[in-house]
Image 1: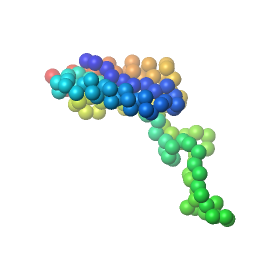
Image 2: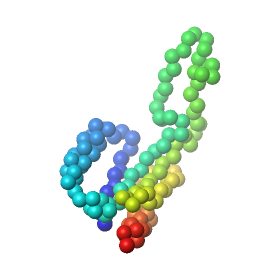
Image 3: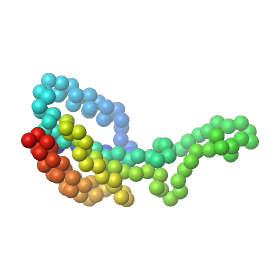
Image 4: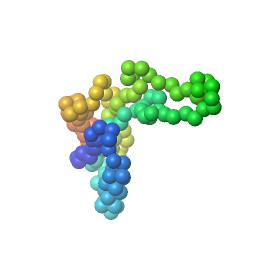
Length: 129
């Protein structure tokens, strides 16, 4: 069983770098037999913004209309505007998903992998028979 995961250190990743890496990976694996993919467990984590992207927003308004309902963007004070999740899947379908409580750091990430990758691999072996 091979493990293929990805971890992005912070939110300052260069998207072009990841697009190029994914394209390279796809080209290198074009001729891999289908049964090969039954031995892969994919993992990733993602921050989900509950109120759109966590960036500064600009709204163009006419004078005197800035506080009208259609010009307001909802926000959440003191954080709680996003959740972080980790998940894994294989050719046989989705496996585990974990909602991360608090901040993601190396220790939290290692704990998630320790508690979830091995059981998911075992489950995949059961699916294959």
